Length: 201
Image 1 (spheres, rainbow, N blue to C red):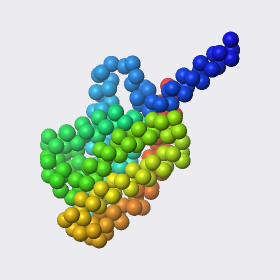
Image 2: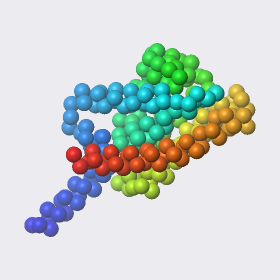
Image 3: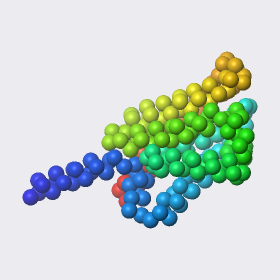
Image 4: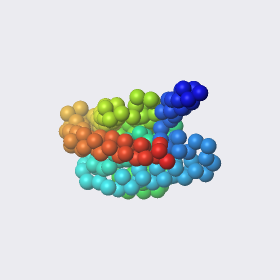
């Protein structure tokens, strides 16, 4: 009897690991809870956009740190919902992007490639972090570094169409490399600590 109970507990634990912490927390709750989580996440991204060091043509912000934390805790669907709602609010005129930018201009200007990278990596990191083996320190570090690389690659590719490859790398990639490593470490620590706490509540 005790063996059967242990087996059932292990099966439930294994199944639970397929859900990211916030997904697990919201499971079974009303739609209002999910809407609140999406809005809160979008405003967290907005706040991270305002924490910036002014640079041209792309400012340095805490956006990728917030994005990775959100995706690492939320899973793919919730993370995508948060990022899309954040960008939609900005497109509608709310000053939620870096430098308080809003409207459609940021989606065709120098930051367009980075914004596309945010959408792609939100889903990708959310999916990886929701896998049973996706929340270890090693897995999170590798996936978060890859996410930064993808965002910078897309940002560079878009900038290169206007500035040329060399100038785009010098202004849109090189200044962000050290910050990418630091934000990766901070995001991994945040996801591990917050995620473990959420899953035990």
